[in-house]
Image (cartoon, rainbow, N blue to C red):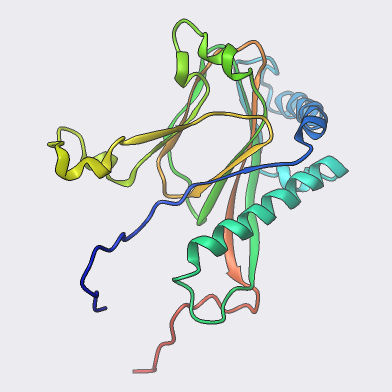
Length: 234
């Protein structure tokens, strides 16, 4: 590949933020549905249904068979189609725009009492997402005497983060700062990100339990051929 003279921003890290219309009506119904699933799954596992942290099985997609659940799935798929199309517009071969979104796993998590989810990535998929069902309002979260502004946020670490430990920082590499970005939890908000991106859920200790729906997705060509380039037989 020959690069033309000039500055090239290579290997970007796209993050998409979308808001679900009507979430104020839909989310309370989702919260009740997920609460019932939590009770059933905790009982089946022999766990306490009142633990500060709970992560469901990853088969939530097939359990969302109500109008509210299906509305959430449609919103997720439509947002992914928009995000993936915009991100790959210049990388796909000419004429390739039709895609098939596969939700490879979907689950929900509930947290309170200072619970958190440590730094991690998601494997065997290209995109992941977090949808916020409920959480304390911003002013209540920010007033926490220990966690403050980072209370319950999702923190994303830039790709160079692992290499920046002890690195020299000056005006020349200021473009790498800050090394992480915090996305505030907003009910009805969906955050999409590349599955390889390191992230974590910061500690949450609010009055309202923090409930989120997470998922992994892969993207395939609608016509069934995922190859980006042709290969000649050797």
